[in-house]
Image (cartoon, rainbow, N blue to C red):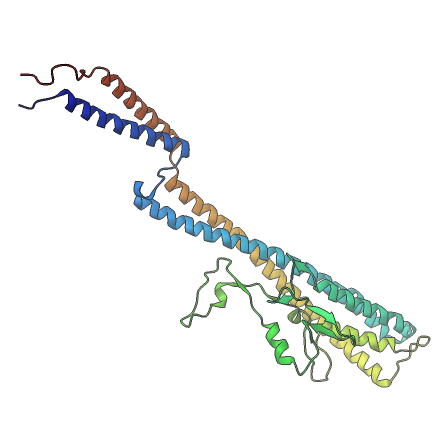
Amino acid sequence: MIRITTNGVLRNYKSNLLHSSNQVNSARDKVLTQRNFNSFAEDPAAATQAFKLRRSFSRTSDQITNSSDLMSKFQSAWSAAGTAKNLVQQAANDATLKAVNDPTGSGRQPLGKVLSSTAESIVQTLNVQYNDAFIFSGNDAQTVPFSWDNNGNLLYRGISVDSTTDLTKLEQMSKETAYVDVGAGLTEDSTGTLNSASAFNSALSGLNLLGYGVDADGDPKNTVSIIKKLSDIFLRCDADSGKYATDKDQADAMRLNNKLQDSLSSLTKNWVTIDGQSDYLTENKTRLEDSADTINEQILSIEQVDLADAITNFSWAQYCYNSALKVGNQILSQSLIDYMN
């Protein structure tokens, strides 16, 4: 025969009442926070899965930010390069064709001034900044890309774009990289070297846009340098007749005019390339945003409660707790006989 005491009944009642109280508090927290769990211990499996998803969501959010910043940068670069292309096409190209045309030879000096101003405008246009960083300075965004020396020669980060002694340095600067994670995988090979196909190269070199070095004739490959040389030739022409200063100047003008056309084609091609990179970043940002939305939905499906179920469970827990309190009023007082024979 089991002997039931008042103390035993009270201890059991207190334990059950505490359990009901904890259930009410837990149900209330789920309604208020709308979360399935608030600690790892509550649901280790779900918490582990949620942690992985949140880490993926955080990485994707960073990639979206990177893509957005780069998209703005490359759109600015495309706009600046387009302005430079138009300056070459509309001003330099037209002025040069007029200058080498004999019937308009008397206007060669004024056209030479137009070409000089055009060269200055192109340089100013390509020294554009985005977020206080020079866009066309390769991976040295704090250095002005283009400038002039005291002799009127074009410089790129302090080095003449027409230099033959510094050609190796110019080539290195034209190939500079600054890789950014935009969600393309970001992997390394067996030697620990970043796989260039798994990241986006954010470095833009003005050397690649305008050209550098000299060709087999000793003429500059840089578009602005070609325009500047043509300007110098036309400014040396006779102010009244437009006669060239020397026969060599005339031959050089004809030759450089043809090379300016080729340079314009190259500049246009590079401009289109930047446009393609900008479009890629735009599409990539959209893809990442869709991916982030999907991951967020997965996180919510794990962490977020069904509000209707949560309210129902809370109501039931509250009802059970209130019922327990009513039962407590009917328990015998400890002042009565503790044992029954």
